[in-house]
Image (tube, rainbow, N blue to C red; front, side):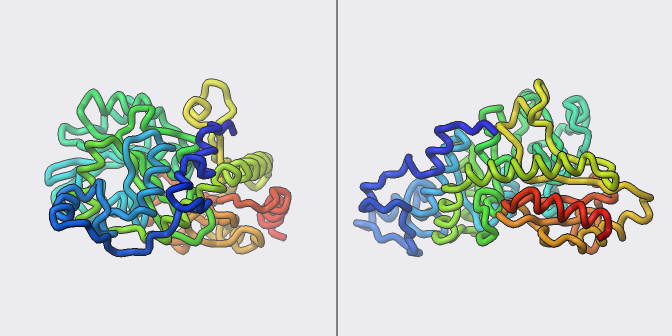
Length: 392
C-alpha cells in the first residue's frame, strides 16, 4: 500500500484551524438545530443559498460541513454532501438528476439495495438495466438513447472485480451521460475516481471511513454545479440528514483510517494467499493490486480486507455447506456490512443470509462466502478458516 502522505496528514487533522476552536485537537460538535442570524435580511439571504450558509441543520451544520470539506479534499472534488446513510446519498442522486423517461445502467455487481431502489423508480417512469460484462464494448452496447446515468462499483464489494474507470468515464462523456461510483471499497485513500473523469463519488461511511461499526452515514463528492443541484433538489427534499455527533464520529474515524487500511490490507492479503492454496476452495476473489500493468495496479494504491471465496463441491450441496462453514467460524462474526475492526463472514447468495434473491442474475456464484478481514492477527483468522473449512 502506497498512501499519499498529504492524504494521511489530512486524515490526521493537519488541515484544521485549531485557533478557531480554542486549540481543540478535535473539531467541536455543534449540537444545534438552528443558527440565529444578525438580521432578517441576513436570514433571507441564508435561506436563498442554504447550500452555502448555516441556517438550519437539516441543510448545513458546522460539524457536518467539516466532514464534507475533508472528504471533498481527499477526493479532489469541489464539494461534498453528507447523509444519514449511504442509501440516502444514492436516493438523493437519483431524485435530483433523473426524470421520467430516463434510464440507469448499472455496471458490475452493485450493492443490492441500490439496484432495488432503482426498481422502485420504475413506477415513476425511470428504468434500469444491469451489465456484468466489464468490457467497454459491452457497456457501450448496453447504453440506450435515454441513458442518463451509469452507476458502478470498482472494485465490486462481492467479487472484487475492477473495471477500466477512465475508459468508462470517457465513453459516458462522449455521449453526455453522467457517471457515479460507489467508492466505499477503496475509500478516497486508495482511489480518486473524480481525477479519472467520474462525475460523482459516493461512500457508505459506515464501512472503512467510520471503521468501528458504531455509526451509519454516507457522503457524495462532486463538482460545484452538480453539488448545488443535488443539494437543493435531492438532499433538501429527502431529509436524510447526518447528525452532528455522527459527523464527529466519522471525523474521528478518518484519524485512524490510514493505519487501519494498512492492517486490513495485510490481513486481507495473507488470508487470500492462504485460501488460494486450500483444497476446499475453488476460487479466491481479491484484486491483483501488485500485478504490473493490471487495472487494479493502475487505479488503486493498495488492497483492503475484502476477500471472497468460492467453495469447491457439487452445486446442489454448496448452499448447505456454506452455512456449515460459516457456523463453524469463531473469529469471524456472522453479520452484514463490512469495514469494521471485527472480522465478518456472510454468504451473499444464500437466502438465509439476507443476500439478494436474484443472486444468479447478479452473477454471484453458488458457494460464495464474503469475508471482511478485520484487525485481528492474520494467523488467528487463518487458523479459524482452516478449521472451519476442514470441518473440525
